[in-house]
Image (cartoon, rainbow, N blue to C red; front, side):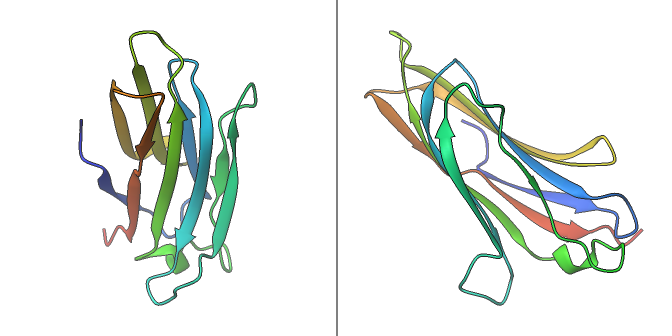
Length: 131
């Protein structure tokens, strides 16, 4: 299994930042995607749902005065419970952040579950690119 936390360097003056959660292997399950401010105990965004036939959930991050700077230091947190349907127990989840069509960071977790479900917690820390 790869790292469960990555850092996404974004452009303050670039386009909107979005996060997408993709559940592979045609498995079901449930998720919550939260955006945490570095100085708050309450999430700024709290989106939850179930993996069904719906498209992959996409979260658009807030902007202020056409700038993404307010997202510096915030954490995107995905809490996932994959219902493993394959007989071999295979599961796969990808949590990615994009800006202007460019992939900024991706956390992929895959493997073989021992039971009927697999809990996962991929996270992406947002940092403004100083260049």
